[in-house]
Length: 105
Length: 313
Image 1 (tube, rainbow over the protein chains, first blue to last red):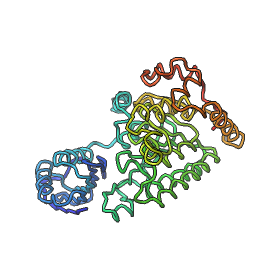
Image 2 (cartoon, one colour):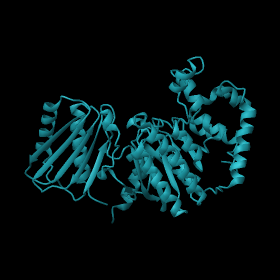
Image 3 (cartoon, chains in turn green, cyan):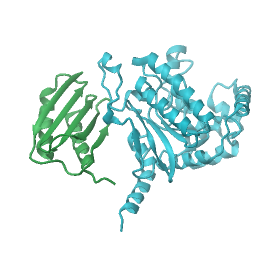
Image 4 (cartoon, each protein chain N blue to C red):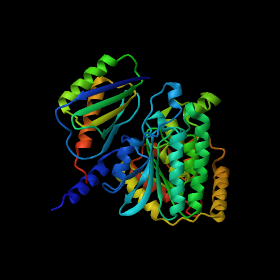
């Protein structure tokens, strides 16, 4: 297992007011993303635990793309990865933010 | 106009469209219960993860593959537990099991609120074998205590992992079970039987054999499962509602009646070597046609052959 952490400053906070959301499953080629609204509005953190070691450079780029595209301010995303491909990771990160931005019932 | 009716209608459509087999445990729970009614206990944000998997350098899941909580089913209070069959094959570990044990104790204390368990498991997680085995024993004890206190515990089986090992034992303790064609119920799985007894005894690669021996249709015909349902969230929801409403006593008379049912079953079918022989012995004319039969036709047939014995189990 390898642990990776990223911290980004972002221009704006993620929409909505939900405190928490979760998406995905930890299985081969899949991952789960737990997203929590716990940080100041201009900060974003990602904590990743992955079964596939040695892919730090790829994670860094996928995370940078995600942060630039979504500006997930105020969010901490915690990832448990079962060796997903970068496109699956990008999809799950986007899904997680979309879920926490949904209006509460 | 409020948006609630629209949300409800959407959920109704989704329930009919979404496959139980394909859905994740969280999707099943969300769509199974009334809209927005689910309240999770010890949710993923609590990070109550397995203390053992890191020893084996294996990935963890924040809910350890077990979701527990409460919600509403057609406006009626229910407790709910769901296993994620894709995480470690839905297998029972220490935390995974403890969450269900704790929920069952809450069910026991509440007495009149039923529990629905969405089983999807290969059995005990080998990496935490002793803790997992203990968890199974604790769950069975807590389940029996909940039923003794008057609560109903309904098992729903139709996931990828089926319901094997200790999961099969837990299923056997439930007040009632509903199963889909994809759901399999057994203790030893196909590969386990083949490994221990040889390929002549059981060929785990023969999918047709696996399904007609352990699959939902056979389990319904044998009376292991009370209802056979389509592979949709809606079908499982309707079955659970029916099984919750059904009266079910739980006392020594019921257990004696169950014991009698099982010994009669052994007498009647003990010499059969294949499920098809059992179906034939049960009086089904065209037994070979069963595996290919559509759900509605099969349910109609199963109801003509034998009503599940409500005085047993």
